[in-house]
Image 1 (tube, helix red, strand yellow):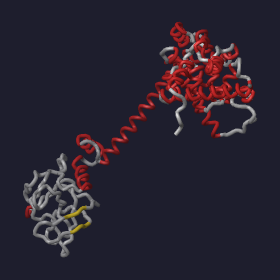
Image 2: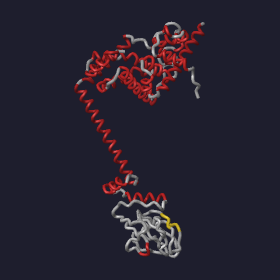
Image 3: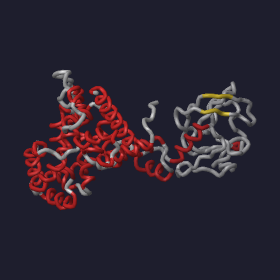
Image 4: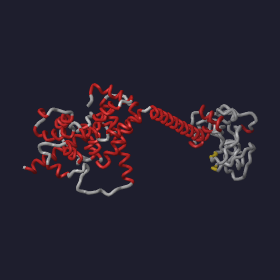
Length: 185
Length: 248
């Protein structure tokens, strides 16, 4: 998070400052690409690019806090993702291999290595195994850093529903980790 | 129905976990989960931060240039005008449809009558009252061509106490006529609109009432709608022939 400087950075980026826009981008893009990787690995890069393109053309029209900027950007990205998935469903493609999950990593391999030190990729691979709405709620709350209300706005759901989804996702993750630990013992 | 998972304290612990409670304050059972979430939310690597940055900067530069900004503003303005024009068209179409259906408030209905030839409020009200078969519901007559008469008063020139309409009947309308007067014919018939007010009778006493937009009267003067001009095929002037026509 940029923090106290956010307002100035945003204003200068909207006025055309490349440096300030790059600062915004570097701050938000990792969370954006992780979120999109979990939601739809194959389309993540394209959707992220489209989301940024839409964001830069509307940047001067945005005003708000840093959290609301994230919420705004992730709402754009989510809408672009829905569009992309709709288009993809009209021209279905054959998956390259069934051995790889949405993150491109072997899911069983990721689960085997979660006991002590998690890498970001392994953690994201486990979250990606959750039901999609639970994974989305966990990603928006934990990785993007939105509170329940903002996450609910992005997901177009009620705050209560998002809270329940995140809880269920976390409980499922905890159960999965406990199972893996018992399996190793 | 899915069973709710966990109890409230556990949920609050999960909330705390997502809100960034330090690992030292997390109970041991949840530590693996805490580590997983920390790894997922770790700061972006340089590779992640640079990924796609060049293309985004190029897009940002183009969007920030004055010509592009002007074009975007122009596109937005054009889009707003298009949306506004479409909304106005939909509104006008809906209003016109409502006007022809006769469901607008009376002043608007009369305005539509004057401007686009929609039925007047009086005609619409007469249609409504006829549709609902509500004999005691006089229709408001606001159209000057209809010249309503106060209830129960026989208009000048109306023979044998009938209320005479001042408008032509609506072709194709259906109605029921009940003869309560001297005549002996009661019946239901199909209205055959006839613009002439002179009664034509037949021998079988079948009513063929003529529904008209406004004038309503009946034999006992209680405001019952009177389907005039004279029903065709009424042998004895059946259908309120002796009534004191009550007009709204």
